[in-house]
Length: 174
Ligand code: IMP
Ligand code: MG
Image (cartoon, rainbow, N blue to C red; front, side, top):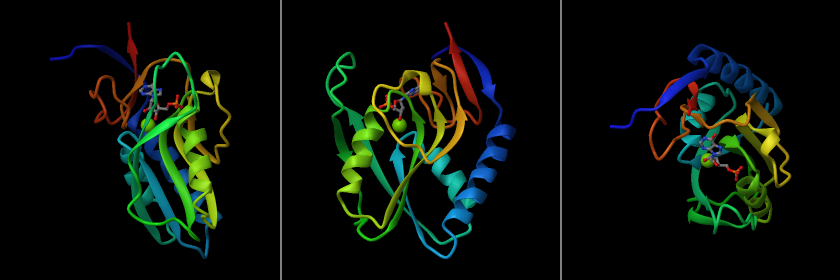
């Protein structure tokens, strides 16, 4: 049994309200078009489900699993694809949905790779952003919350695979 002290940073109600706003903003931006969501496993899935329900244009969803490659001390900017997409993104309006952008290593690499697959458009949506930690530049089109440089759990984010299911966003105190 794991026992960590977790304090609430963003409540379930605040998250719901913000996702509703983001859904409305995205629906407006893509009016008259179809949107292909790419959810980044595993953390991005929780946010993707809630966001997708708030988008009013037709939506399709695909999943991708990636992991940072090599030592965490050396930021090579290379990520390993654990699971690639099932469907082609060529000619589609694509929105990548992620839980958190931290150093930007994963997403800067991934966005460049996806751009090479010739989508009609490519944008990035993240529930959280830790801008202080950025090592690799990444253009974020939709951000839910800016969060401080602390270890965040909940709403998809884990600590050693625990706490993804917390309905709020919390910080591990140590
Ligand atoms: P980046 O490549 O450094 O931007 O890392 C992004 C990934 O690291 C996210 O998709 C998360 O899986 C993980 N991550 C970054 N910050 C946190 C955190 O505070 N708590 C849990 N996971 C995190
Ligand atoms: Mg992630």
